[in-house]
Amino acid sequence: MNNKIPIIGEKLNLKKNKISIYLKIILNPKILLKKISRKLQGKSKNYGTFDYRFLLKKYGKNSVIDSRHPKHDFEHVTNKQKEIFFPILKKLVKKKIFNILDFGCGVGRFTKDLGTVFNCNVVGVDTCEDLLDFCKNEEKVKFLHIDENCSQIKEKFDLIFITQVINGIPDDKVFKLANFLTEKINEKGYLFLSETTSHKNADGIWRARTKEKILNFFPEINLKHVSSYIDIDREVSIFFGNKISK
Image 1 (cartoon, helix red, strand yellow):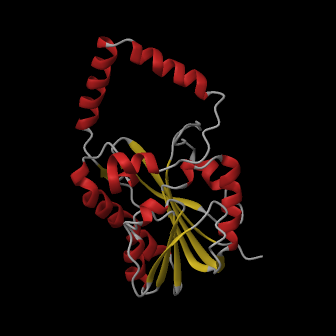
Image 2 (image 1 turned 30 degrees about the horizontal axis):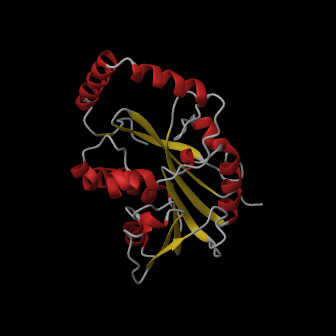
């Protein structure tokens, strides 16, 4: 949609971080040995679903953005993402939206504004109850703690919004989740998805996946890669599509 790729964050900080890491390794070779050991163990390790509680203790609400951003940049990063996401949504959504599910809403960075953009009800859900402690119910905005089976989600929605969620979940569970969420989209409803992407797939605490792999999780949605931006040094891809009528 836009040939110029937006960038969030200062690239200069990366050079300083890398120099600092290299100096630590030179001064303490044990760090390098630990990194090699972790990589070797990771080849056979099942990482499971990412748990935000550890990051939450360390970074607070900043745990839902790239932790390399300075703490005072929380609002700046969130606003920049809104400047990228919302014009895409307003351009591509072609029908009246009556309700939205903000899946994996975290601390509710986008939930209220989604309701404002489309003048509708929004439900924000997350499996991490500690993140939801930052959220506040309002007249048209409700927050709900859910389990891994999403059994608390009863209704269907005209739009499901997901950002930076699925790479924290193993493949088998993403397929199951994708099927569930597809069922929760109304006929001719939409899915908006943003996620960090890479040129190859790699497992880890937070996974790297290609655009093709992410698209394959949702076979019953006409999902397409519509835009990208750079968060510090990582590509974040934006996908959008409507549910395929049966």
